Length: 453
Ligand code: PHE
Image 1 (tube, helix red, strand yellow):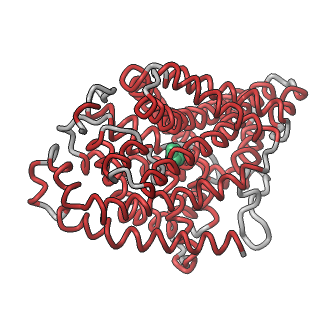
Image 2 (cartoon, rainbow, N blue to C red):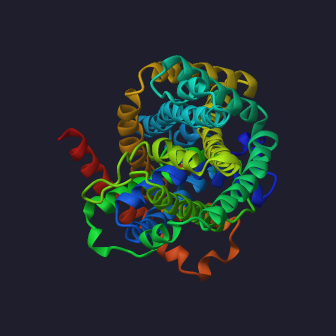
């Protein structure tokens, strides 16, 4: 039953998969979300808890999603239909994944569009065209938002239409090294500026007194979003994996890459904030809390670039917004691939047609959001803060109690002969059956409680 779906796309190499999945994981969540959370949650204390969340909850779940995907060679709906013996509840979980994908993609496009328009804002600012600079920086201008969101959709479409190997993998192989180079150049430069050392110490010296339950929940939520878990991206990417690839090893690389990039983003953004402070830009309120938490990258950072002035300020700002745009693009690609693979597998639609249908659907929702930007908060709460942990919980329960970890282990064994010799074989089932569901249920309950009351 499973073998008739083998002739779908496939990653051409192990590295190809790791780069594509890391591209999905590395996104605005790493470069914008993570440093903002670190700065307002006690620096390295958050970093440590985040590290634990990534490896104790994120990694086992990533292995689970990849195993489901590779075993069935299908999209999230098809995977859960086949393994769940067409039971309605599991089909619903699959549809929920695809639905979260479409909705997260729709508002992520608008935010990614803002990032791209800030690149133009900086060009306009440094070429002293203040009228245009104001236009590009206005995040409430519906028409401008829609225009940039559509540009982002077109960029994503142009890659996804090429398929798994020639589109997604090739783009990841090009973008990820470029991304890392830009990031390292920016960090090296930031370290030479006055004020950066204060930022580094604020980042790396932990304030353990700030660890409380809300910090742990923020870290867990951040890990979910950042690792692209709970909505079937990894089921889909797993479905393109070759049987001889070692899933736990690949998942460990992706988790480590995502964590390392978040760590590096902290090394870039937090010192930058303190450099801005040194230059007279206000970043903290009277109580030491972070001002403009949500709009940090659009408020504090451009001001800093402007205060640096000249060629340096210009180059820094362009590289920074290019970095953010590239990170966003590899994530939108993966979000897009989920509903596309659903249409291809379940409705026998060709890739080109599937891409165009999803582009149309996402385009309509993104344009609507562009004109009503306050919808972003609402959608982020429903589909990201609640949707992803809910999806993750369902997937871990499904694998742990229905498909069962013994069967998943047979799939994992395919690319990992020595699986019985290590601790993985003992620990992973415990994490999937008990620890992940328990911790995820806790975040869900707290998130729902905080949202409603
Ligand atoms: N992981 C991406 C980021 O950090 C966002 C994302 C979430 C992508 C869910 C795919 C699925 O920005």
